[in-house]
Length: 205
Image (cartoon, rainbow, N blue to C red; front, side):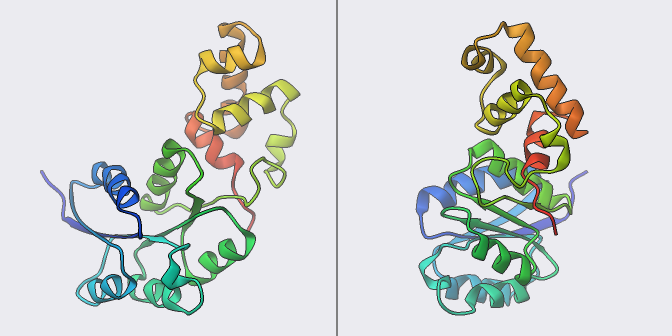
């Protein structure tokens, strides 16, 4: 039995990103009604026509840089799941996204798998805010308790590396690499490696 139609808005200036985001979002809903636009006016017009289930907005969009267009989009989209993308993670942009009501914030420099997972968390009524730094300096306490090898494994997991690649980079056997990965997942209280990376990059409220 199919579910209700889910209206989804994607605002991004770059055609390739619009296509990539459509591909990420489509499997998340039984009947997605996707609208991908490049102009802010088009996004606002679309939002006035009906309530979306999800809105993915490129916060680095040239038309969103100076004025309060992003905040207006967030107001019109509420209470829909709002996901903000950015060219690179920045503290000021992260704060702007959260103040506007976005449930998620992630940099386009992240791996496609991480972006897709973050969108999934937001769609499931969760929150995901990426830290502005590339590492885990602002990570939760459980990350700090990892052994040096486990922390290295976590860093490699965040870059989308497989167990075999982790074994090669750490110069250990594949079974040992798997043990490090399992230890990280267990320490995070996560169900899988992707969720562990998401938990490691959580930003305190």
